[in-house]
Length: 98
Image (tube, rainbow, N blue to C red; front, side, top):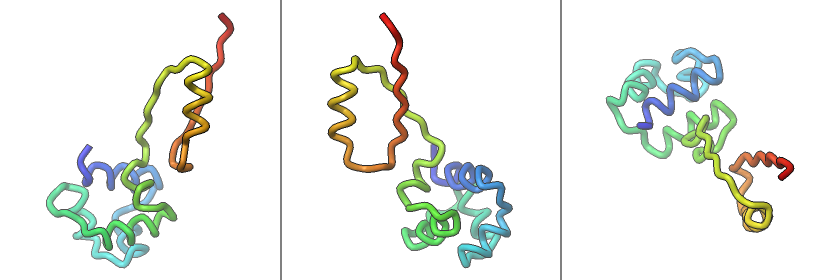
C-alpha cells in the first residue's frame, strides 16, 4: 500500500474529515488531499504532525490496519513471544485441541 492510501485509511479509521486532520496537524487541507492522492511525499516532520493528531507514533501510523497472521506450534509460539521487543504487534493465540 502506498503512503497516500495509508494516510487515507488512518484518517477514515478515525472518522475524520481532511479539514479536521489538517486543523489538528497544522497543515493545509489541500496538502492533506494531495498526500492522500499520492501527489506528494510527506517529510518525516509532516508524518510526525499527522501521527500526533491521531495520538499515534509514526510507525503505528504507517502500519495502521495491517494484519499479519502466522501459524506456529506451541513451542515456536512461546519462543516468539519471549523474543518480542516492541508492543507494536497484536498477538492472538488460538489454541485448539488435537
